[in-house]
Amino acid sequence: MALSLKQQLKLTQQLVMTPQLQQAIKLLQLSRMELVEAINQELLSNPVLEENQGEEEIRQEQGGGLQTEVGERPEGGEELPTLASSELEKTPWESSALKEAEWREYWDDDGRSTIHAYSFEAKEQVNYENIVRSTTDLLDHLLWQLQMDSGDEQERQIGQLIIGNIDESGYLKASVEEIAEDAGVEPEKVEKVLRRIQRFDPVGVAARDLKECLLIQIDHYAVGDPLAKEIVEHHLDKLERHNYQAIAKATGSTVAEVARAVEVIQGLEPRPGRSFSSEETHYIVPDIYVYKVGDEYVISLNDDGMPKLRISSFYRDAVNDNGQPKDAKAFLQEKLKSAMWFIKSIQQRQKTIYRVTESIVKFQREFLDKGIAYLKPLILKDVAEDVGLHESTVSRVTTNKYVHTPQGVFELKFFFSAGLKKGDGEDIATQSVKERIRQLIQSENPEKPYSDEQIVKLLAKDNIKIARRTVAKYRNMMGILPSSRRKRPSVG
Image (cartoon, rainbow, N blue to C red; front, top):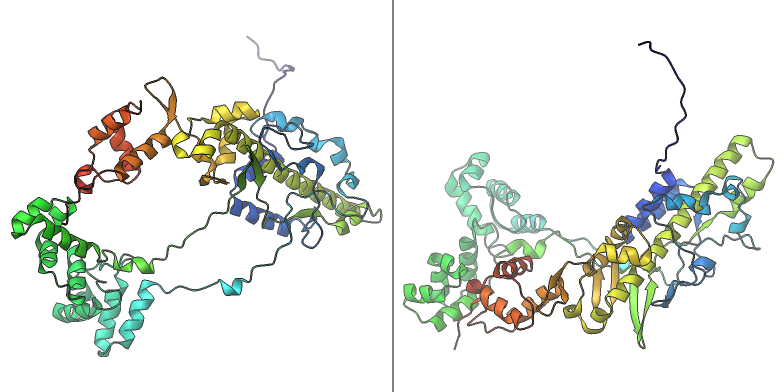
């Protein structure tokens, strides 16, 4: 058979992720802080974009309905495309008007841009000098005390080695022998310095284990309960299991006396370095607010603190200037097109968040009215079909986005959970089951806590039928100890 070259026409369809579409998807999944950072980065990289800080709030006609009652569409809001599909390519965002650089529709008669991804009321700027502070960590705190402590230069060097081997919880992670070898001294010398450091603030720091840490605090605070010291020295394993009867039998005490000694031990600090932890509290700023007005719920996007973007009038005039070099004009047109797409992508993000939240509020109306016990099972597919988006788009929208509701602040993903079948055939969300288990354990008698099997029977009275192992799994997920370790004997 002879080989030959032939030409053949073939028609195929292919989904192409344009850079603009990739940018829109990326902006959609960013958290609030990440979005602000992305906007600031775009302001630095694109000279055509600028932030409007001093002018009166101007809303684009399409975004005028960011705050409406549930069930109503934002005024002027067109049907939104799905970012996860090729439908976005069908929108007129890259029409011939854009390609011909007809930018006049994006400015009003005064020459100001009417494209604003964000708008917020003028507020007094925060004086950060009043809130910025520096914290002292455990290492610095101990080194400062070491410098103030009496001792020769060699002892200070040993002390620095000891402090350098203390972890964030305040425990010494190197042996005395290892420190003595590094310092070139006898272990007895290290022990002497170590005992001094263990009396530094916080008391019990540089202990080698929990027992030593608690004993140091008992001696330092002169706890007038010899039983507490005996329990720490010889019966910590029984204390961990809350086996008060075994401790009473071993020490020749009553259970009430053991309970009082345990209360003393619980007042000690098992992690001396906790108060110097470098972990800082991160406060959540909600992306959406849901208010109840009368019998309806109102959704409002939180635009406070978000930059209000516009296209620079200076570069607009430069584009319209026929005297500009061809290369410069082409560059500016490209930047204008990029800026317009960036602003529209942010508007698309805000509208999509609004619509998804609107759908969630519709599904979880009973939860908003009555609380977590009434949370309904909900999956991404339910919301995606309701708002006409792809499931992956809903997943991106609900990740790292927080909503303030009458029941508290929640991540949007909180409202999605699988369901369990109740005895009457209805579905109940797993979050509601967990909350019911938590309520049962909180109301139990501490002297006779509920076992997992008893919790199963109590849930069955509410038509919630689950296995004992499921109760144990949910209890562990909530960080609740088993009944044997929750038991508290009577002190009286």
